[in-house]
Length: 216
Image 1 (cartoon, one colour):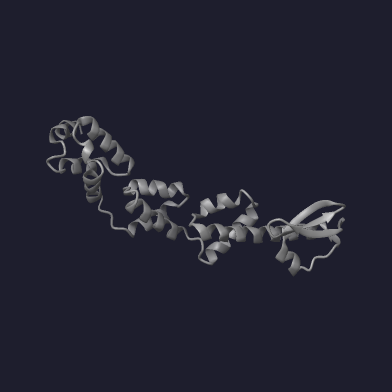
Image 2 (cartoon, rainbow, N blue to C red; image 1 turned 90 degrees about the vertical axis):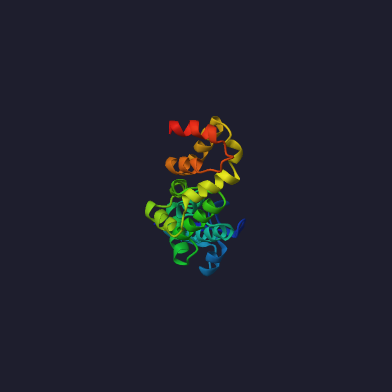
């Protein structure tokens, strides 16, 4: 097997060292790996250099995954997509597996945290919540199980939204239709929305509501 003469090993940016042959950079690997292997200038087979680069990529991918997860939570799909911008599939999957093993990456936990945000900050209903979760790459079973841990009273949630956010829109038919469309986008069922409108306080535009409700 052909051998490559590494004439120089010197520091590079990002905690890397470069292996040079005839003034040309052959590959760059993490410094700790170079230290472990006690790399010195000399002859290396292409297979040996590929093995060094593969191991370096794996270590760099793990370090990047830990760095990213230290700042915020990720779903497996989102973290995979982020790592694939810099690393090959092998290094990416190795990093994901390791993050799951140490508990740093957990789709069920991610789903629960996201649901909590969508319920209490966004005020979304279950349909929209499930769409948001699957949009983040959470599989349907995991999403449904996570959502089942929350006690959702959607009629009460709609009533609260009508009272706190949309009461000023209930004075005419156009406003009511706009409110219904918004709440549907929030993930609430049409029947629950119209029932909540029918039971809204008397000062919420009864005449306009009556005209709109007859169409429903």
